[in-house]
Length: 420
Image (cartoon, rainbow, N blue to C red; front, side, top):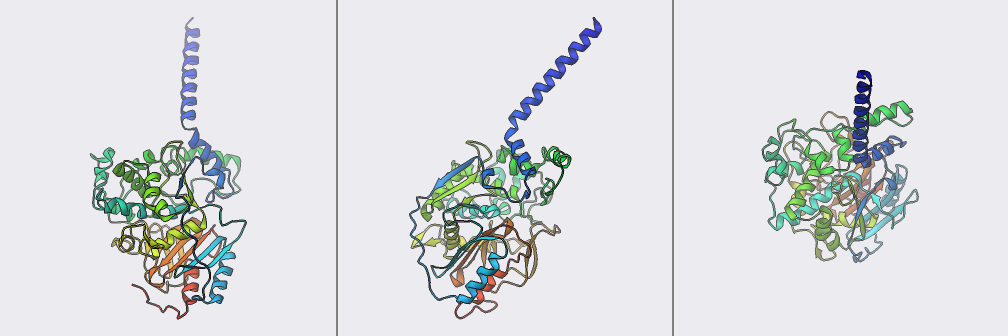
């Protein structure tokens, strides 16, 4: 009888454990599905369009008039040289706007003008644009402590991190490894299984692939004194999105649509969501058609105005670019700015990961949005020049080639040191 009772207890315990495990797996299935899908990809850094699910769409109405085409303000040889180099380095779309005229528009690899393309980390710069209206309306200030809006941190040292420090990527929060926790292409089944198990509890993987982006961001620990170390980090941007939601009382996508996308007259855009009716990723993966990415760049070059409409508060773009930290004077409020210098511009100190430049930018008033695989929007306000490059990573990528090729091609070419 005793043995039977022991066996019965063992069976009951196993059933309870199995039931609990099944419940955990069911609750976490959206996350696991994404992890398994990424683990099976040949390149975990480039997700196919089908991966961006669920999404939430915003529609700006598409009322913006098309940019007028043509003009001779840039040497045709420079335009051709830029297009040739772009086509040889993984580009799917290259658009150049100069003095309000579309002087170059080229597509490769099946990309169409009306097909959306992910901006990857360029998406975090949208936060910088969206914060302008909130600050102008007095809803918050850059020096507000995060704990004012994140009640989860009010009794926590992390609550003293300011909104400005999050914007400048000097929060001091844990720096997630820049390398993917998933196995490289060609890994065997066992390697992939081990990687999936390891990824299960990884904070950055939860933030990238999980079903609760806000909850994942709030769990990152403080590891450096705020304001002392720069790290281009997903978590800072996601927390900024969460703060904006709480400040405005609106979902991030609704606020962005109301204060930026609709006044811009853009078309349909898509945010990648953690779950249905959840929160969008505010650090990554916004998708829009190339011409709407160009309109965003035009805002950076035109002090927030486009076609006579002041979309962003006047002077806000200059503040985005100039409000930099002593730790990294090339990074402002969720945008890169100034003269990128020759060499490696690292995303985290000592990581060896970032963007290489073969030479300094030829103008020092650059404001640019940048994402994985060389996705970039460069704006040079002093030259009324906007360059959009969408594409994927390619060997030999050099972040200075396209801007400098086109700057050199300006009629009355820009001289080193031009700009602010």
